[in-house]
Length: 235
Image (cartoon, rainbow, N blue to C red; front, side, top):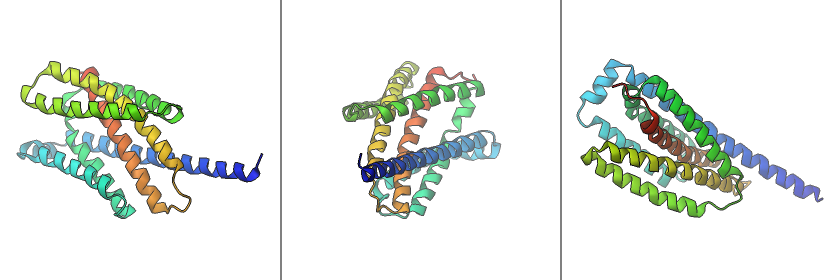
């Protein structure tokens, strides 16, 4: 056995594990910020009055969130790591504000139980994406088309207000985000293995932030879809 080859493989493994760990750490931070913000806003009368009493504010926040995602995706290589970190943090907080309705619509018990189901499902899909030898590229493309279909159907249902259609969208959404979680995890694993040894700490952090944002979006959307299916309404 070539000792130099063994050392090289070990270095690559350490680098890969470090990057993946950083991705999940940032994802955990984002989920924590979102959850805390959503809980705080939902239990603060002043915040609720501002949020739901100001015409168009929720839509402004939603468009702002989309702007953050598109900006980070398009400019991540050109902005500083500190700027990317700040934008990622602000986005997580904004998402918490818009998701505060969850604590108003569903019981605490159903939120916690659904979160646990979502976490276990997400973990299983992530592990599968990490260990499988099968190329999930085709699955990712198929699930992305499903995601587009979900977006279109959701927009249509804003006007139809059909609970039956929403339930169908939610079931399809669960399948789509389960597939995307496995695909995105495999993509991150592949990306981590191609990080050059000369990569700076700032470059690695920006890559980890984008990976965390991708998995964060998968988790949040999977949770929302599951919550509609399993969540117990306060009404």
